[in-house]
Amino acid sequence: MMTTTTQRLLDLAAAAPASPDKDVVLLFLTEANALHEQGFEELRSIVAARVAGMSPEVLVAVVNGGGLPCDASQDRDELVSLLALTEWQMTPAALAYAEMAEAAARRGVCLVPEG
Image (cartoon, rainbow, N blue to C red; front, side, top):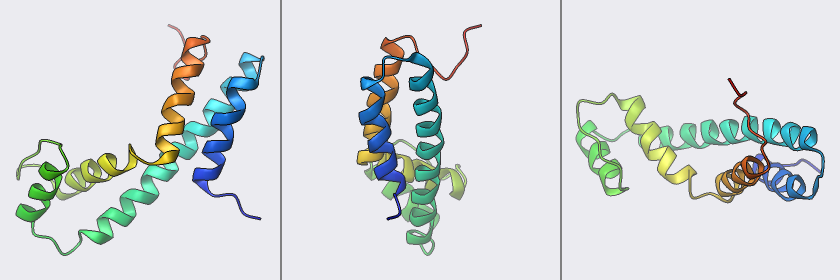
């Protein structure tokens, strides 16, 4: 059986809090981060295809309608990314990743090394 990006992210998010080993949590978080980025890029490609025929003015209106301020001076790729980000943040995978990262941070585990 093939595991989807979403399912693997959900699995990692469920497993991380149960691990007493911070190094294991860091490994889970590192993998989850890569999957989070992959999932966003997959969705971004889908959104780009969905809005491919939209005029810049309509695309700006759609992005603004999604609650993100933007204007016609922004390039199409940026507008597509904003629209995809709005959608991505509400997916189970993104929500699970955010919760996992917050829980790991409370335990002192973070992907950004201390300076």
